[in-house]
Image (cartoon, rainbow, N blue to C red; front, side, top):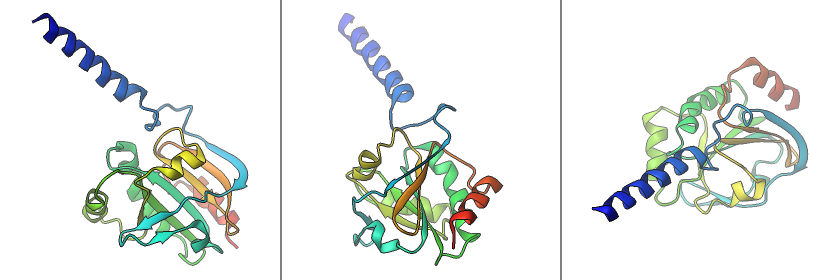
Length: 177
């Protein structure tokens, strides 16, 4: 009985730490801000739903908003419809939202999420080995970076956002030429 109590307490402690201290889940308001810094965009590849590899260079000439998300991340899922509506406000030849799913394992869960939530304006990509978050030093999810037409990261945003907010629309419009 004593061993059972110890295992229960350890399990509860582990669950609490996982929920509240998980570094891939950005929740605090101090993390939810835009950071402007120019540096080269990431070089890691990512895949589309057909497992075709892509690089940022494949999107050169466009302003790109790269959103790193996972199906287990509630704020990620909550902001996805906003990203989808944002994409519909801009010409896809000049501005493109790229949603890169970080779930490990089968792609079916993310594909199903897009289908169930009528996410139609943005393409779904995958980085199941989580190379991109490590490369850009993402400290939580969702993490979103803005890449200019020359492949330079100009800003990043940590945490969920209302991407249809006029602030973001004006910001992205400034970078589109």
